[in-house]
Image (tube, rainbow, N blue to C red; front, side):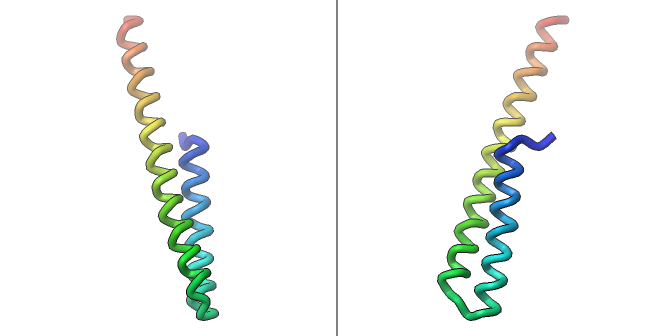
Length: 68
């Protein structure tokens, strides 16, 4: 299941792609740059979220192993 960081990261990536597309259509370089930045930060945030989820799952697995 996705956590908040992963969801926000995906949303930022989508927002960035939309800004980039609108910037390309209108010739607005600043909007394209904002879109690229949003998309990049979204990828980082999603990566952090995935890492947090994986660490949490590993800790749960260790806990389950100890209980047995």
